[in-house]
Image 1 (cartoon, rainbow, N blue to C red):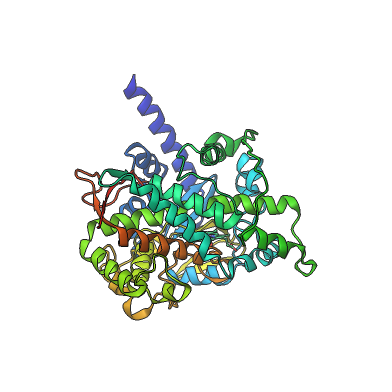
Image 2: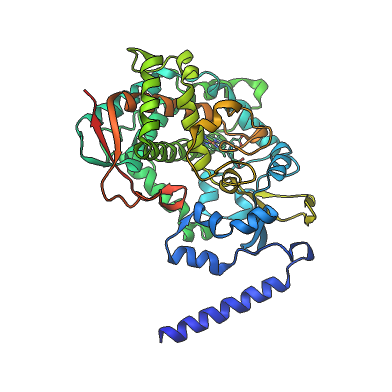
Length: 457
Ligand code: HEM
């Protein structure tokens, strides 16, 4: 029975594959195809990490800088050519982001996130960005510090016992986002079952559920919170900027869409980044010791770095940038739908194709990096990571659509790492599934990582 089912499914898929391939435009004929089989086998073998996606097709990415696949009936190209990255990122009007409404029409996802600062294009995006920009100009360091100290206090009770770091870091970054962006204490560090993180996770599950992506179902839990006293959080700045009539204000609904996307963009990425960096520090003890030495040298008795000290933490910044290169939390950029033909070497990609810039591939290409798969913070010693002229380091994107929260995240990471390095020696729990290299559950979210934080007295 199993054999016949397998045969029927395989034959059906082969027929679909053949039919689709028959329609392949000439321009695509020589480009390697990532097939449905590849995707299915990734699901079956639970190897959904974008590292697997790259390494299983590395020869084609390196040969052509492009691999194609069918996405919802259209051709989509995964691109690792930095020259194309430059072209795409510097001309957002020619290569706009694909709108959610077009990709997932009538879905809960589209209804929930609407036209926000991340997904919109053109004049709508400009309006969102103008209202949000001022809030990210000077970030309230003290609010970051308050939550980081709370995070250390809750670690104090778990000395020497293994702790699952991804979950812990998600609670930390969630609370930072609550406090810094919305002036509200979600208290997920104090209470792992806090109703806020529970309902956030529920919303995520509902919004990303394949069923609700295809069919509209309205079941988003809403929690109302009492208005608190403002402490200079980002929401306050955003509301002030939105009252400025020169800015062409956002409507209440548009504001809500952008705040909803902050909840998503503003903490998962940094939680992943801190998890992989702590994993690296637990594995590369010499790097950990060198970073700790720098923290003591630059900060002296200060627990939290001042604005000036943030810049002086050169080695820590190199570690953060190398971690973002090795394990970019956003391993590919949002789909761009090209509205004019795009030439890659001798290939012409026709207008209408979807392009997905595959950052993981760019960050691991041996053409762009020496020993690309090794953790070598020193590689950033000379070029000071800010120099990204060849578009080889794109963890936060580039051009006008570059991440709005890059400084937010870097500040958050530095403060957390300074405190953790000062107080603890970090090691990987014995018999960890990650002892021979980190394993990813999806894209760049690792399988649970147990780390041991031993207090340094
Ligand atoms: C390690 C942490 C983070 C990483 C790796 C990251 C990465 C990225 C990337 C690659 C993009 C460009 C997407 C594209 O062009 O398709 C982006 C955009 C964006 N990010 Fe982040 N991000 C991080 C943290 C944050 C935080 C903390 C916030 C807010 C609090 C944030 C808010 C945004 C917004 C609003 C955009 C859209 C900007 C625009 O299109 O104008 N991000 N991010």
